[in-house]
Image (cartoon, rainbow, N blue to C red):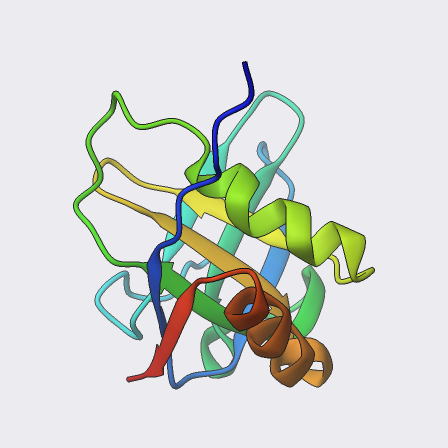
Length: 133
């Protein structure tokens, strides 16, 4: 039995973001975590990833700039299913790549800034509500 994907409220964050790839064994001077509406640091044995506002990108790192971020209104209960799929599905069908970050309370979805208007239109048509911060 197929269930209907949940519709959520998303808030568009005002800053422009960057997704950085750092060497996990290297020494990097990381920007202060308190800066910007979103700061995410993830370490694996293969890499150290950083999502931060663009003006805080550390020097000499591999970086993808100009991302817009939307946050799902939360907190979200851990028993909920399909939240990210309800966002990723319509974006994928429209050919809009995303970068997702999940936290304890909610999910963040980043799309390239030049596709943000398209993403907002696609998500709105899918039943989601998007508001500017």
